[in-house]
Image (cartoon, rainbow, N blue to C red):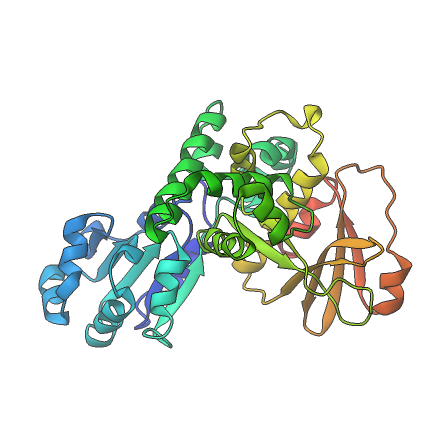
Length: 378
């Protein structure tokens, strides 16, 4: 069993008179995580809101009816709670009136669940995101040496639990997972009928990881206008498929000020979208795979460590660039990612002169642990 970083934090938050909201795409192990928190099964009432009778039950729910359903149980778990209309108000009702009951709601989409709970549950919830396995979780499981040996494999197949735990079946399972949450959640919930255009958009984004993206250009490729492209990307973000990284601009007139890059949360999903599972040795996109891997893993690291950082990329009109900029605590930290450990990289003078107090580090396979593990890990 591969332990999840969030497990300890969730245990600490139980029975604090607040709902626990656990968000993340399907197949990342939300239900498995909850079932492994050492609950007494007799204390839990599990409800799967993908089932119509559960949705109907909550259509006219009251604290009294929930209390009757719970009986002597102490924990109510609602899986895929975003499927319940006005879920935020329902969770508020239970949390306010049944203070001795711990409510836990999971959702595979932030646009359905989070948007409906923010206002009703203000001050009444703990909210966490669960991602595919992280580098840290796999190092904890089988050691630094073994995980570093598998980095080239991770760049191709990613970290989805079902993929990691079923070696030899990676391609088949990735295709199933990608089809499941891309179509079932994004297309069904938002009633998007032109799935072929969404697929073309994902493929275009997959080919442009590590590059600046233009909504107009993407629209031309996919047969959509720029506003529709932006809407679809927003939906894909909220379904934990991709995320945007804005450009960093503080001092220089020639810094890009409104550009963005788009990354996939998981390398395996990215490669499934374009059906390219060639090994690293046969690829011409290894630099982009390495960049997507490090940026997405850093997102997980910052979330799990509860580090409130602002993340950017940096580029000038003269095409001087840095892969990642992090700003926190009044400090600027710059990073460049290189798969080739022998390649010499120096910080551009333009950036150095504009931000003389900024730190700079090159991340390669040889020092990845310094970037993705806490200082006190060993």
